[in-house]
Length: 74
Image (cartoon, rainbow, N blue to C red; front, side, top):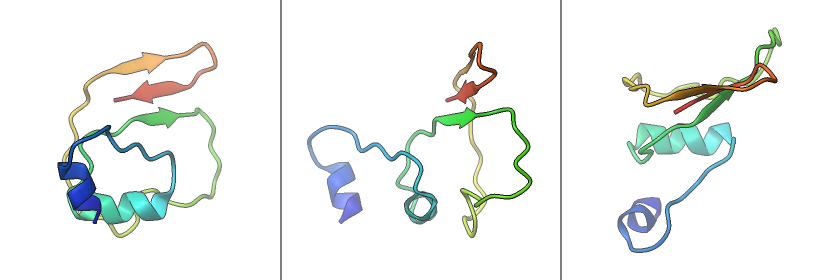
């Protein structure tokens, strides 16, 4: 169903967070672009975003640093 939505007419699909959905769509090759916001904090623990996802290359299209220390990677 997601593939039909992606290939159909209409606006782009945008996902904020939700590691489970990202993992499933990444494994199906249904994500065209990623935007990552990195916060310079060592949490020590956390839920991995790409757990059980097949390895694939990414190309950095741009990066923007903010005064807060956060960095947006596209």
